[in-house]
Amino acid sequence: MILPTVLRSALRPLSRVAFRPEVHGVGNIPDHGPVILAANHLSFVDSFLIPLVTPRRVSFLAKQEYFRAGGPKQWVTRNFLTGIDAIPVPRGGYRAAQESLEIALRLLKDGGVFGIHPEGSRSRDGRLYRGRTGVAWLAIASGAPVVPVALVGTERIQPVGARFPRPGKVVVHFGEPLRFTPPADGKQGPARRRAADEVMAAIAALSGQEMANEFNELSAG
Image (cartoon, rainbow, N blue to C red; front, top):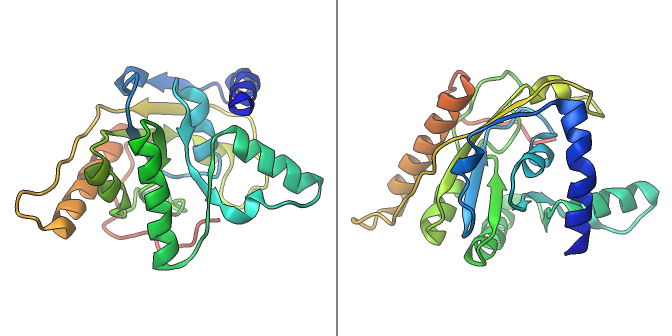
């Protein structure tokens, strides 16, 4: 698609000036084939910044209502999200969550790169919360490696509640890929829980965040 290529070409130099990203371990991202980028979540800008510092095109999920027709602001939002390969999904309930995972699975089976925040919601206190098992479901179902990603400093660029990002310094760490296979005993639930915990431990090792032994129950916003 032309739009994602053009938009990235325009935004990458702007992001280098505004956020001065320091990127480590980008070579841990495979050059081809399906990949899951599992990142911590401190700011609204996280899912926009990762695609700008990653050599491959990365798709994140975005609320379906952002893609609807409307006034000039809605037009800008819709085209921006389309330009960064965001995937529109419905929100709310188990069925919507499962549909989102199935959309991501199709992307991975086509050899794409999918970005996910296993915590779900942004951390309000800077701690790293337990990961939901969706990331493990995707990894086991697709066979794609999971590359842990740690963002440092994005909460200062756009704190929770801020309408717009501000200039600042961010650091992005890409860790070594993790691989998960279907459990030999067939017990999917425990296997997914172990895999999700392993992913979060890898993210914590990169980010230096304190790990919270609980889920982040706050709604994303």
